[in-house]
Length: 131
Image: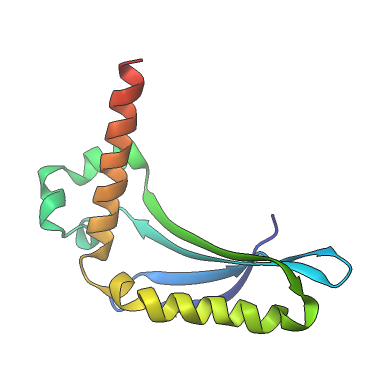
């Protein structure tokens, strides 16, 4: 899947929100229109300030998840008229920004999201050990 970076927003919590265009022509004048919103959260002490994450060491989290954790959300529509493609692409991005930018910019977003991913990792690990 080809991804083209089309927009970057610097968040007030020090992270970067990147938007990638993943649209492609389907048939005739019909398009698949897709946008990926992505934030890579480096696992460093200064970003992991969530009080709930303090039960774990950054090293323990880094050993489980790697050097960073990726937040990603895909927005997509199928069989879009070629004349509507660009407006829809911009509309998908604008809608995402309006709905989530304040939350993604919160100082405790990185810690909360990393904790969620770490707990999911631990749950998967426990489940596979019991199989």
